[in-house]
Image (cartoon, rainbow, N blue to C red; front, side, top):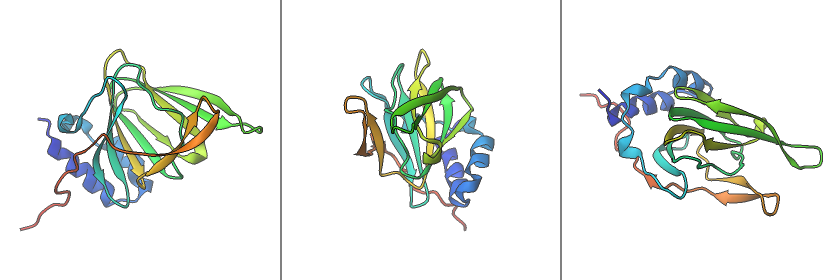
Length: 180
């Protein structure tokens, strides 16, 4: 049976670990036991960023994507990012700056359900797009939380710093196990 409470187990595991173990935790965790419906919000205009948990160590965000919705090309402000695809299909496109400081596409990959992707500024820039015919759901872990990042403006052909925000913040009330 799926339960939104099972996400507390994931939060506990991440909280008790350093980010060097996040890859292993996310690859081995059984996400099929979690019902994310309480955290979902959908928009016909853009993908939504729905915060489930945030502290000084990491933030856990559920992104809800309708067909064709995508991010702008962006960095991660020197933080690490893991993307776990729960449902649908995503295209991830990677970019770098050439010797003239011009943005160039390096390669792309398709992310399918139960697949994990990793990104940080050492790898360059990226964008994500829902390439599925329907809705996609992705779970993002940022260590440490990202308050702002640089987005590529196609009009000015420059990166612009932008403050990030959540569309919803439905943080779980209790993330620690009670003892009696």
